[in-house]
Every structure is written in C-alpha cells, then in structure tokens.
Image (cartoon, rainbow, N blue to C red; front, side):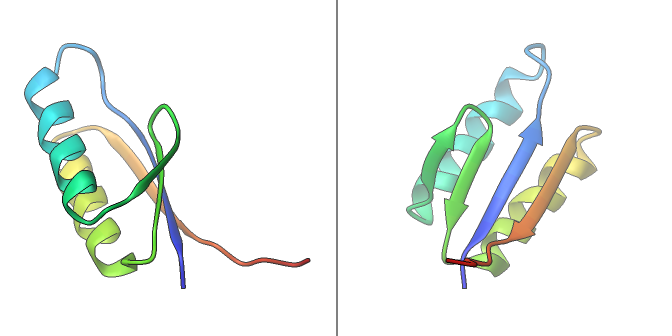
Length: 68
C-alpha cells in the first residue's frame, strides 16, 4: 500500500527541510511535486509527517487507492 505525504515547511526552517528531505531519500520515496512525496513505506511516512507537525508545520499523509 502506498502513501502520499504532503507538507508545508516555511523557508525559514531550512534545517527541518534538509532533515525531511534526507529522511524521504532514506526510505526511497518518490518525489511527485514540490513537497509531495510517495512511498510504499506508510509507517515511515507517518513518522516523517509527525516530525514535521511536531516542529510546528503542516503535514498530511494520504493512503493511495487506485480506482482504475
């Protein structure tokens, strides 16, 4: 099952951006757009989203479901 992480981190929080980017690369997430990543490791995406939210920024994880 794939998950999609969507987040918003202000430009002022560069260190958080780098930390998130490294975490996403570590789980081999696929960048779909700026601040939108896809991965089959739903558990790790949730952990990354919580790290973002705990830093005062916005993040959501959506479970991907294909219709066709």
